[in-house]
Length: 282
Image 1 (cartoon, rainbow, N blue to C red):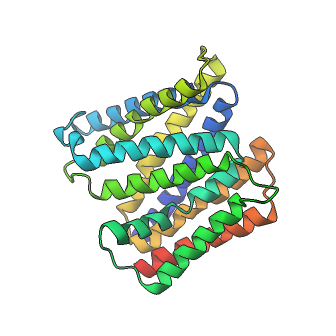
Image 2 (cartoon, rainbow, N blue to C red):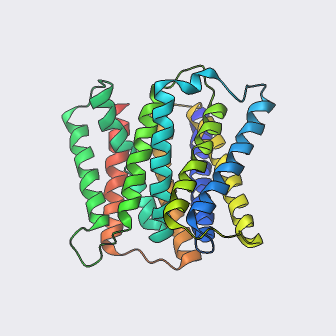
């Protein structure tokens, strides 16, 4: 029963993350990407502050200044800047497919930096996943989109964030981590806006899209946290890959995207190698 509930919560979290991406992409088509990211970070930060206070948790903890938390914030900025530019400038389904390789990078990084044991079969699966990312990026081919490199940058940033989170002080709650994670998006958006230039007032429609993205983002984070606390991690975690399915559906329905054969094959290989790596590790 716990595994079933955890799996349902994980699927719900991935659906909410896909909705968040969709609203961010829609908003970035009508307003500067930097402004959208700053507003998204600010609203999400307020949401997690409210959740933390409802549980009697402090909004500030001195552990935020630890080395791993500073690393986490840096990687969060890199990840958010890259992935936001990726979903804004490339098809949503492509960006989501590349993002699915994050767990593979985390496993490889855990082996290199934390000394975790990774056998030959898992290394082989990680290698297949990386080759699949190249299939989606298709460097040197006609379908290559230079903007897709932003998504790759975002994926590597998120992997670094997850690795840094492993070393983060245990005294920090998930809600507190959520506050600081969303707070990091404000300077990330400011950085994009500095490069982009031309700031302008956001319309009511864009504000509505950002608010919707923030609500789904907070719900997704809550559901993800709850899912990881239920059942066996080896059973619940593979359901993270349902995010790709939701992204493909939303990309087709909302943005008229039509994934080609290479993208589908690459996405399938990433999912298979990721699930195998997670299950094998468990």
